Amino acid sequence: MAGTEQSGVRVAIPPPALFFGFLLVGVGLQRVWPITVGLTSVTGRLLSGLPCFALAFGLGAWSLKTLQVHGENARFKREIRSLVTCGPYSISRNPLYLALVTTLVGFGAVLDNPWLFLFSAVLFLLLDRFIVQREEKYLTEHFGESFRNYSSRVRRWV
Image 1: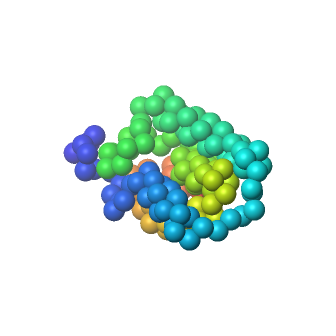
Image 2: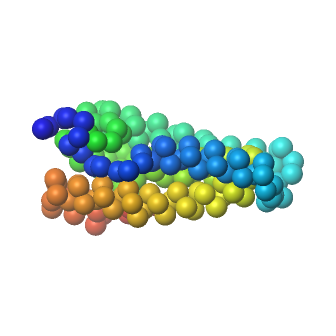
């Protein structure tokens, strides 16, 4: 049924849950097996991490606003009624996921936590292989040639 909860992309774990899971596990691992990148000064950590947070926040807010303007939202399991290809979606097909990964990198820098850098890479790979591929299959089934044309113009990530 159109607009129902179970008519969209189905994933085992929503991306925000993956993000928070990796953040918590990374912080926990740092307490058990502390390692460092070498960003010992608070100033150095902030100068490294805050730009990541700013970029991620800006990209995430812009992406969500663009979806909202087009009558869409970022919730899983909901039918996607229109293919949004403007705003941040004209630069990357996955700006919200890019914002999640960038946020985790920012936490890695601010907390001087190499585990979070590692988990940023793992998050990226999981998103790419298990979420984005399912979404792209769904979008191809629902939007056909329009999505294929969009995919040929706009890169998956950056």
